[in-house]
Image 1 (cartoon, rainbow, N blue to C red):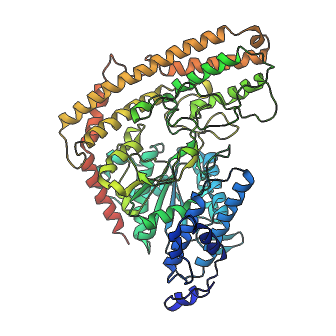
Image 2 (cartoon, rainbow, N blue to C red):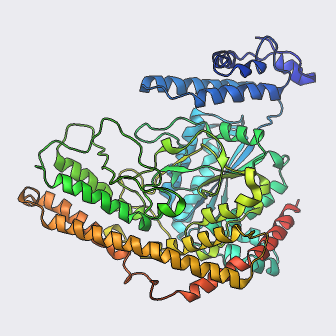
Length: 626
């Protein structure tokens, strides 16, 4: 196939384009979407942009087709998509300018070198399968991709972990990726460019920064906000800042869209996200996560105990040598948001009954082996892994939809989006992303969307029972307390639903009085306390029934020490999660109104517009540096 119609050098380059895979895919797509003929036909595309449009539609056709039923056919479909993208990259490398977006991939991390290494490995693997951008700066180990830069934002305190994070970041250069390490010294240097008044103006965005040294463990939200200041300065020096995207990703995620059980479909992230932003006037795009749920374990206890009660009611009536009962012919995805005990607050209906344990063992095995497999993964629940209610990638639609929540571990923004900081970061509460989403929804409208770009979320890596580090959590193993997370979740929900109510009245563009803010917070806290008390009551009832089940276990399950040990572990987990949600371990209850906390929240909400002005002023100052 010969291309014509370009202008000058581009015309010459287009005249040499040979794209057999593109031609074949568009020919196949013509029967499905007849309008594809306008992108490719007897005449060649008149410009590089039209060539990109043709590849865009071919990629969409391949990624949106129903996945083939067999594994072999799915592998063939993925291979065709990969080969099409390689053809596109080869053609674009011939042109002097690639009009697609550059990416900053921003990864906040604290005391998690193993998780960070896993995340970066998944990124390299994804780019191996779906390359994006040309290679340059040839070295003995290969080239470095010109359109991608990883920024590791370190919030650690341990010097050994900081050194490992830095080494992982700097080691990316030898593995084909540009990278920048943004550690405590680098953060201090950025803040050192600000005046004392400017730093004071950011205290409700970054926390107190008045000391001689910058502390670690400021929290993920404060780290993201600091990264925004750093990127504003970097973009001021960029040749094409308007062609730059910033993708925030968490260190406990992987660049995968297919689950371990094979569910999901392959998505070439950078190609697809670039296409979405080239076609649409989007300012912020949020993806989602699948795998481990994106909420605190403290609000998943009710569902866990419900599933455990069903499991033990079943298995304790069986002979341990009987065949495993936890395999189904069809592995249907779990009900949406089934993991969240408070899902009704977010508009989700309750699932119908308990969720069966999906036994991971494939070889022939008995019920005792199945119980052991369940108990082995059970302690990881304290670190966020739900043994029965993971999030399925099947729940992610293929369309862009209006968003109301920012998944702070997976969102992309244009440089203009840096003006939207994570609100109330120093409070270290849950639900920071949903709060930001409620503030953005009315302001940005169709420029704030959710898209089909899920990342695999692993709170705990395979074969492990604990995560490396979780801020604010004390203890380890089954002795770990959920009380602090329960409180952080409660106050995060109070802020979320209070802000949602105020936003319906025009906040933050319309400033409510302190009396209105305080009254909204008090009413919201009162209503949520009733919901939280219902959760506590349900957890206590289910825990008592489970403990009675364990006590009544027959001799078949108690005469062997190993089987008795499995039941004891389950008993310890039940006692621990119940204690973590008890009024005795929490510092709030229906009888003791938390007036001091409400006053603090009211101050932050009232000062949001003032904080925005301070933030925008600092951004302008950084952007002006050249």
